[in-house]
Image 1 (cartoon, rainbow, N blue to C red):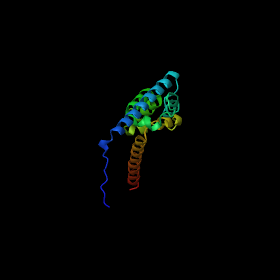
Image 2: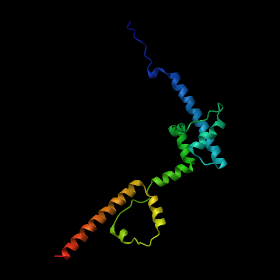
Image 3: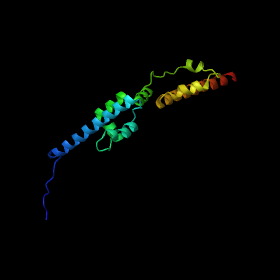
Length: 157
């Protein structure tokens, strides 16, 4: 009853490698054609637009999926080169200068300052930069409060 089944190892599946390569080539050619079409028509190059318009360039009219664009290295590089939304998103991620905290920045803050401008400035910071700044301000306030209490205690002696 104990029969040894022949196991097909992954290195024996040459036909599968061939099929994968054909599908990859199909995806790349359709994706590049679609991206070039979008650029020529002035349509934003987004994952959704590529997926939607790629059906027109596919003989089977299936198009390509959004994840295909993300996972295929060659297609993803072409997408990054032409996508304005990718470039904007990437530019926001990189903080231009690391925020340094010192007392002088707090002393220069005026109560009459434009709060909308301050809000815009803080909205452009990354979450990590905001957390670091908040912790630094809390430390500053705690230290000054400690000094203030000690100073008032000395006055009452």
